[in-house]
Image 1: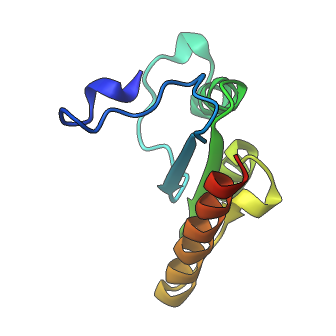
Image 2: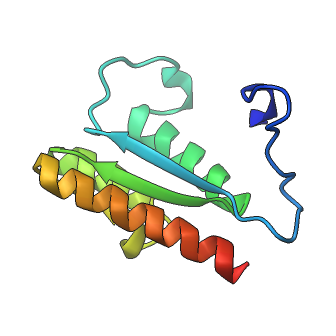
Length: 113
């Protein structure tokens, strides 16, 4: 529940608000630098479980695998809500283009819902 993150007066809409769309952007190289709780599987298994739970809540997930190796691209492609939600920029220009497309897509989500 993310509403505690925002300052007073800017609380997000509840998940069941019919006139809102929830979206999340994940940007990383996809490298897991630290294993935390291996009793729940490796970092890739845990990331997949978390991404599944996020998407099960109806949240649209955009991913940006900036200069990511193949394994990083694979986990972020898995987490994305679809092919149109996954970006793999290699340069600053491509990164800017990816975020422009994400912003346009989120704007379209708001208009559609």
